[in-house]
Image 1: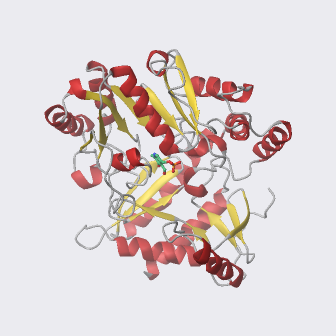
Image 2: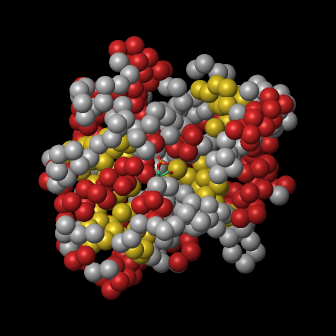
Length: 438
Ligand SMILES: Cc1ncc(COP(=O)(O)O)c(C=O)c1O
């Protein structure tokens, strides 16, 4: 790895070079584009991000679940450089190229289910979610879309409507796209319902009474919710919702933008529950940081959209496709999906011990390298101030952590799968100290 895999602080966080860049940012970039940490990156590799002052931070964020195979993974760097030298763009809709087709073939193979599939490529997670809705509407001739409490699907107009949380994602940005309806999510820690079938019956009742299956094109769900708080639904919830969709000719869409691509110890989080979605949305981890997203699904559904109904100038850009193929090779050749399982064991063990010693850690949850703690006050209410304070302490000590959750009281951990156990332990030591001192 290009950088020594160690945490090292040589200035306070932020250092002077980062502070100078932040002043330039404030003068050049709008306030709406905010940053989690006050430091600017200079280099990164493995589990370390080095800032412009020379500080080395342990990365438990992976650029929000993107650099799953390690930032600038060697095969990816090589493949992107070779592709850039060959051609950077021709537009797949004008003169197509092989890497796009190869990525489509790979995603048809890697997504759950062995039915006949097709894949269309796009740029961002939100764009792919929008296209999944377009495809479901074209295939069913219906308009309504059901999403869930705590959902996050993006920041475009349709995906803002699909996202649950107002501030900061939607506040002041309406009016939003119509025909989007919200059903109750299974959230065992908060709703106390441990049987997923019971939670699904509650959601299905809302869907049937407030929307009606005959009007419904798609149910879109994150198998493990991301921004909404790393909510893992009770066992049986996903399968019951998927079955109801099948029974009612409704398209079941798994938004695996954050939970997919090896992150949870399976290629897709749906697999933990044996669920085979009609359409799967992939982004983030698929191309190690190059902008690429995909909708993969049943051939008959995917082919429902007319010629030229799907696409975009940059969708499936050759550089991003080269990165995706190298990412897939790295995941498979280096056994990284299994590594996510090891990370889960290490982190859950440490965090459960932390929770046993400290009532403020109300819940520990997640799968693979998608793990979170939900922080609560004495009465079990969400404690966003504590989450914010802990994140700030970790940042000051050189550990990148992110917060999330409808109430902002969840600390989430998304390390790259290439991180060493030593760095993970060190990061968790920092968190433990921060919690003691908070
Ligand atoms: C589950 C989920 N869907 C969609 C998106 C939107 O992806 P993007 O930011 O690439 O548009 C995200 C981003 O965090 C996400 O977590």
